Image 1: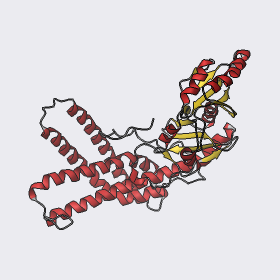
Image 2: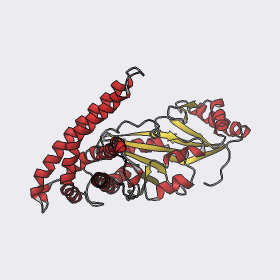
Image 3: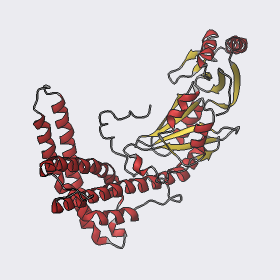
Image 4: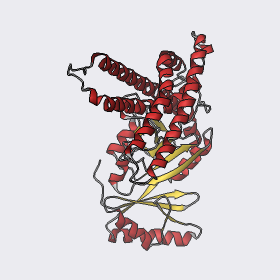
Length: 392
């Protein structure tokens, strides 16, 4: 990241807020103090604003800001662009569907790096977040749950960059799946919205479909491998390395295997439903697959109910006295696994049908118009104890 002064103030005009100031730098508090001294008020988004309903008072405050900032070792720069929040609001208003926008301010240079684990990008945007100073960005959110990141394009006077955040529910083992590439947007909000709707979002939905399918395929493959390994161990009485299995350890090994399969199948419960919604077997060369897809839908409905029951049961167990016998938790797990087994077996039986139909249902990469019927991701599953928290 390029070297910058320890404290900076960037001014921009806003049609609704007047003069908006963003304080940033390693000593950003010095810049904030200078802004407060001349009458700027802190906004909910972390920026500061000065109303211009009294033009003379506003001019006087800006004139006072320069020497005040200097005394606080901060520089002042007037942006040639409109305030990013106004631009984001106008783009959101021109996008098809229901979108909202909010600004995030990264006063300290390190704060913007919090974006990196969550960005799902293979283009210029993620490079800019890694290497350039971005005092603020805007988040565009569709009511289906899609989140996009908008920022001014470093080194350019008018352009903007836009990319996507990764949806909830994906694990690191599919991180290699190609993400959509961020795009350069023009300054005009209507033209920018057109580029998002007709170029970026189709690519996003294609990448999302591909990533969902890869996630489900990976989970089913690991379940199959676990089934095969467990069956081989049962039949031979030996582990894969040839060492003998102690019969006394069989219950523990069976429990570990069931836990592994349960965790893997949660990915199927999360990502298979929207893929099934997109499948149209009658439009493929395998119309006879419709019956198998119906069986898979029915199994998913059962599995989703079992998951909901299990989460409710966990809440009950956590509220019981500490002296509750450990067997109660084990019994609950055993019941869960027994109920889920037919669901998993149904999916293992017809998984190849599902995968080929999901592959055939992939949306067009860059030519299709944005399909607002695409199903949103379901709510994120409960975070296991000790797991990292979500972005922001």
